Length: 133
Image (cartoon, rainbow, N blue to C red; front, side):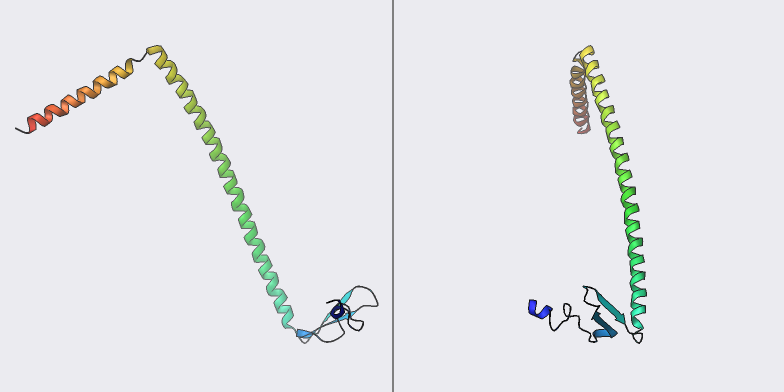
């Protein structure tokens, strides 16, 4: 590999020969620099550069849109988290109130629920019994 990269005074294969599409390279006075020359007869390179610039602008616009969408969604998530925290605090306070009222009032509410269920059962039973006749 090393022998192919330093052939006959060339700098990493950059001889003073013509390369593809009108580009030519040459070593500059013993330094590690390479000079690149573009022949004017290949004007399509300017069109390609212009096309690349347009694509870079489009990519920049897409990146800006992604950034603004990410900021919007981040703000939305933060608001949602704050709403959830407030709702949890409200539920916690209501559970405390409910527990306090149950302790103060006793467990009479269970008896009321059982009596209501029995009443509903008997009403449905009588309706079913009288509807058969």
